[in-house]
Image 1 (spheres, rainbow, N blue to C red):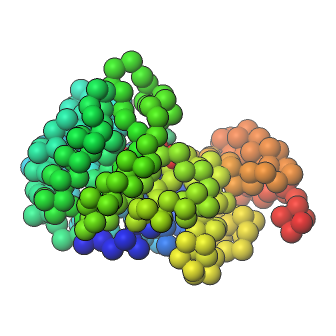
Image 2 (image 1 turned 90 degrees about the horizontal axis):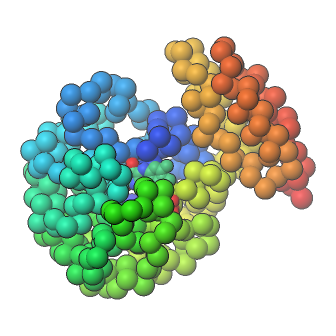
Length: 329
Ligand SMILES: Cc1cc2nc3c(=O)[nH]c(=O)nc-3n(C[C@H](O)[C@H](O)[C@H](O)COP(=O)(O)O)c2cc1C
């Protein structure tokens, strides 16, 4: 079982964004946040290039892998493979609304099949010793959230799930793009507070629209955890406040400038292996958000890091556009 402290703060799984480079970079700024991979489908885990899809650096821990699928056997098999890779948790995606996911009948569609989700969780729990968790919406389309979400919580709790992450809005499967589905259906935080009251034994984290650590902290009066997606990605410097403000631990680094310095050895090692600089620095574009020179930093990286043979000098030159004095002010 995960404890509420384990899920007190996490960075959400985000396709194309929370890859291993991003997670390593985030981990430099917080030791306590729980980090999530991009969603990986059971088909990819079972048949794909596992080292490429699932490889990660032990420094990223605690890191959880998010699986997409709805077949209990395939999920159990995938969970075992991921556990062998060393992941700290398996998370099942019951919230993604994209067409690709709908045609595979998993992701948010699973809000309509809580019993199947329970079977999936039970199968994974039987296959691995690490925690198994679920990330879901409050409902889809015309579902009544108090019924759909409660049925989901009931099914996964009974199946032994170790935590539930709730993106506190519906997914509308007809007529909205995945991007619109992250903004248009209204958020309902009080519903998730009520869910926590009715399901006191399973750790529950709230996700969706949390913009700052202050907001996250306020929500922690009602739920066990806050999961941030876009705010953490676009303004990664926010993560420097997680350990001191939410856990009472010292921050591992004092400033975004130190975060860049701390990232250099990792960048150097990956560059030597042939990884492109831009594939790693694209996750840092928002690091200096709000400081004078932040835009020049972004622009320099966006134009120069993509060039063939781009190395650490590009990053050093980009940082030189930002004024440390403004940080001290
Ligand atoms: C680019 C992008 C990719 C995403 N990919 C996933 C995913 O693979 N699995 C998942 O459960 N949610 C995914 N999400 C949804 C986020 O995990 C999160 O639920 C959503 O962004 C709401 O949280 P936020 O308002 O803090 O960003 C994605 C979101 C974004 C912006």
